[in-house]
Image 1 (cartoon, rainbow, N blue to C red):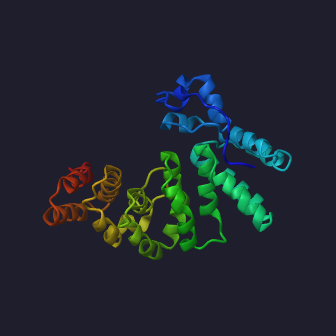
Image 2: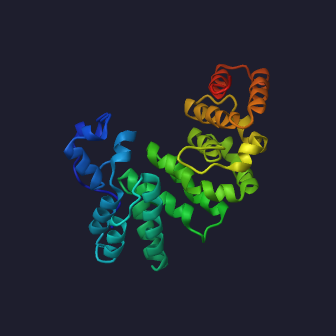
Image 3: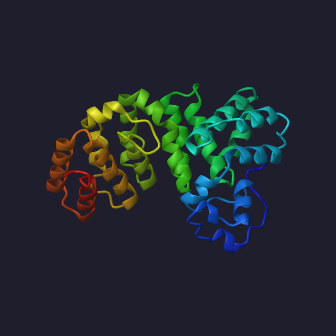
Length: 279
């Protein structure tokens, strides 16, 4: 059950830019994606992966086809196959399998999922962490950290989605835990800290308390008000843009204060994008 592969992948496949439409994905690329042999390179490819088929391929590759046959058949009968539904569903099935294994077997299997060559498979691992009721919020954040810094954009997005519900359920505790993340040297960690608590979020349930009281997240936002990395800047400005839908005057005030405190090009960009929905 090795997470690595000796399969030779041509350089032109690895360096491809990716199709703009799902219908334009070449058959050989789609087959490699579906077999879990390569990573997706853009959102089009990421969304095009059939996770049920991939689950079947991976479990067969690992010699778990018989143990998971019933699960595969159950997944095939699902009416809801949108990516943000199917990933948590498959992850929960993995979690149920992991629970009945010995500690050594569980550790080995989870590692194989978490370090798989396919970004889609690593997404399952992130959600396994988020859905594991045996882990408290501190433990979930500790375990999700490698996925928050994954080199693949899709895994990084799934990482914050996987623990967002747990953070929302213990919001005051979650915000305290994330304050050190907001000043972390790694911009991917700083971005996770902000993105995971966006009031509205993307493909995620809204956090009502932050929609009504955005000021409680200010300690994290202040830490990145002049962040040099655009990846973080975009997250901060999107956070404030979310907040502007329910607290427009508060967002205007924060933007004005930030310009007074730190009138840099980075802050200017954040503030400009943050106010884009305000009239």
